[in-house]
Amino acid sequence: MLDFTEYTKIFISLFAIIDPFGIIPIIIAFTAGMSAQRRERVGRVASLSVFGILLAALLLGEAILEFFGISINSFRTAGGILLLLMSINMLIGDKPSMAPNESSDGDATASVAIVPLSTPLLAGPGAISTVILDAHKGTGAGHYGVMALVLMLLSLIVWITFLVAPWISQRLGKIASTIFTRLMGLLLAAIAVEFIAGGLRGLFPALG
Image (cartoon, rainbow, N blue to C red; front, side, top):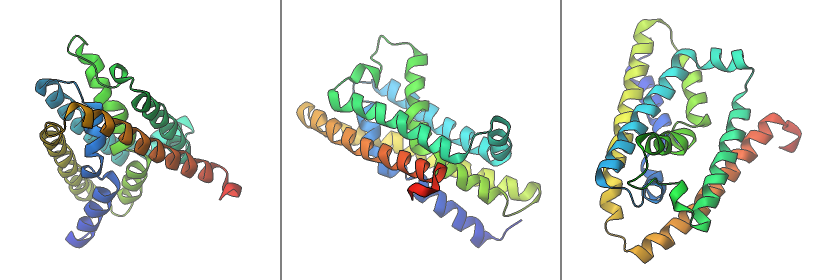
């Protein structure tokens, strides 16, 4: 088991990688048109998904990747392609595919919370690989218990982020919201390209 300082460093590094406050604009874009109840549900599902994904990475991440023969770079590339498709929807204004309306079922709304908000945006390849590496820094049930508490705290922060996002969204008019969505689509496309480029460099070192 590590000392308190080391676990603090782990928390700070994961917080920087997940960057929940940094994706508030993207959260606003993906939840535009949802009722307060739907947005709250998306936030709850997203925070639970982030915790579940990272906890699975902590306990079984390396074994799962090895079992399926998947490298973290392949995961990064696939996540980048998914984000690129989502960003195209945002840029051309195809909102129904991003934010289900009130007539959509709960499964459709939950799917937005899980993909792409939970993964690959929040619990993405960087966070997953970091958790896997941090899991090997200590041994014993105490180490894994503290790591689980760190992940739980991060998930709580993600949930708070989703609660704050509607407050910011309400202060944007319809025209400003549309412009905002297009800009965030462009930003998301840039993030996607970085994901893809990083994954390809890992898969094909000669490209680096």
